[in-house]
Length: 92
Image (cartoon, rainbow, N blue to C red; front, side):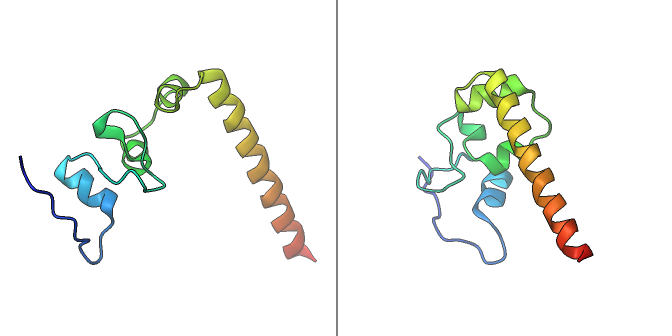
């Protein structure tokens, strides 16, 4: 079994190093780590692999695609409110 180097290379991130090496992340304490298939157990790596359907995202988080849609709408609404508040504060 190959021994993994646990040192962080300066100027890089753990997810960029894991993606380059095509190696799953073993750091279960990381806020980006998911209990999912090894090639997608990092949310950053999973997101960088291109577009996903609501079903794909639901499968990763063990929720329905409808729940993913609800979360997406809620997040978009919050972003729009923040943008509106920001633009109002810039006007005055």
